[in-house]
Length: 173
Image (cartoon, rainbow, N blue to C red; front, side, top):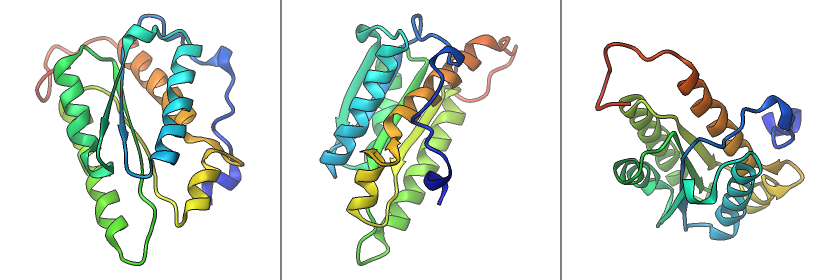
């Protein structure tokens, strides 16, 4: 289990680029809201702690994890964003629904990121049970929302540091 090997919620603030001039979107799924809202708090607080202005963080809520890619696309169409974090939690149940949902969400987020040229961060927990989710939403394995924010800052900064290509792929960057 990757979480048992390393808690990425612990990071060196000095090694992370500042987020002062960056704009972020956060899409939060309401399903499993006890978990997703804890992840959101970790994400939001980390962005602000690293210098993101509260007015430069745009948040929307969607019904469930399946709607995260559409929510991210809606945010990208409404605001000029440097990165979007998608936060959700799909707990394995008695059926294999979680496999279909997780695959669809991961594929949608990946496709949107590649087509838009913007970092779209996969902040979706895929635990086997509720306790594993709690352990990753502020519990013994940290808060994966913090990790998603750190990833968003790093990827947005990286995109801004690289020279622009003369040709673009997709619908813009």
